[in-house]
Image (cartoon, rainbow, N blue to C red; front, side, top):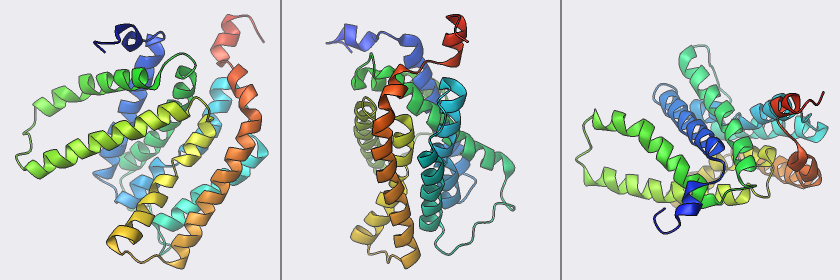
Length: 253
């Protein structure tokens, strides 16, 4: 920010603030849900982003979902269910409704994040986007952090530092990739997080993989690849799309 002040300021500050607010709200919702719900349930509901993405693209940009997306996205979500709940039991009736709403809200906010990121990559660099995202999150989170006791275990700080570095790398790659990827593909690609976690459990920690989990991984990977191939054909329509309120302001029907 000091060495490249013009780049750090950004050109579309309103959209940069919106992206930071959406990302911060998404993380707060997900963390609040994880504190109450089982981790697998919170992760599953938070990863409903592709379903929200199809709805938000239609509501905001008037882009109708393609038939392939409508068929493949539910298949990928079902694959995620098999990964996170290989035993087949998923009862939501005994869980808190507020926590369920927060987990679903995290998925919805994440879908809006991807749409905003796609717009921002037309004018902003990845580091500019991440700088504003971090600034918004610090402004929101720091007052809460100062009111609580800070951890005295050095391992917690080590994990926190490692988490920050991994998050920076992931957010940088995401912002860079959104220059080429559609919001729908990005949301489906986010389903690979549980896939990677499962594979790491098997490779590093010796966790046994069941046939159901392997089938779930296949059901996530196959739709993701097919959606990536299909979305490349519709990139021009996405690039030319404008928000509904912009059309009304410009006098379009």
